[in-house]
Amino acid sequence: MFEIFRQWYDRTFSDPQALLLAALLIIGTAVVLLAGQVLAPILAAMVLAYILDGAVIRLTRWNIPRKVAVWIVFTAFVALVVAILVWLAPLLIRQAGQFLVEVPRMIAKGQDLLMELPARYPTLISEEDISRLIAQVRVQLAGVGKLVLSSSLSSVVGLITAMVYLILVPVLIFFFLYDKDKLFRWATSFLPEDRPLAVTVWKEMDLKISSYARGKLLEIAFVWVVSWVAFSLLGLNYAVLLSLIVGLSVLIPYVGAAAVTLPVALIAYYQWGLDIRTAWVLVAYGVIQFFDGNLLAPLLFAEAVNIHPIAIITAVLFFGGLWGVWGVFFAIPLATLIQTILEVWPRQEPAVATGK
Image (cartoon, rainbow, N blue to C red):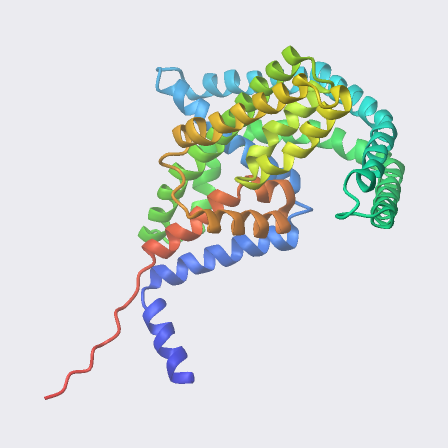
């Protein structure tokens, strides 16, 4: 057993560059896992600065000095955040409040619909089955109510934390962008000068992660706006809230679109019942998902993502469980990182025994 392990170690870590890359990966993972909550504002600022740096680089290609480009991009970013806080956030909060008020009526209407099923299909379902189902739903709703109450009690702490983030994160983003070269030189000064493997992995992942992150933001914004326009034209209630959910659903490939279908269908049914307008909402939603999955996503991520669907779903579940929303957002880039490391990792071929 020891000999098998030694042969594997010699074959996998024979190159010193492999040991350096492994050490960097272990240290980075340990920092995120052990100090992720404490360093959350810094990590969030680094991610956002990394995404915004693409716009800065494009402006510098137009012969705009980097410092001026940083100020332009940062000002646009702050203006976008202010617009969201002043205009969009109150609208979302208002629609979310209206939706919570309507939830009991929706439940009552759904309960009436369920109670009609035993009379229509007595051989398939009984009143006892419906009663048990309704009881289970009530238990789950009671749990959700307790969760909402507990979260509301801690809303003061959450509000203070959000205010700190709103001030601290933009400041960190600005300095990450403004002093990018200085910070990069300082970080790399702790590493050996000869690090070709780490440089190869970084260049490969810089291209893929940057294109994926910026492409995903464009995809979310496009799907959100198109869904908003479609739902508003069709007169669907909570159009802003539902369109935001539809836009964010693209973060979870394959699963997100299927999961969001249910709230869209339920709200349309509660508003109109089995009407042609409900059908039009579902048709519009299906067209948006078809366009996103077959045209927009392949166009944005043709070169950034080349991973099997099973690996994508596994990465979403694993990294989402570790780091929540950020884990879901970067699940595919992280899976791509693992794939790239496996492809470029130096291995020593085992010696082939020869005999006369």
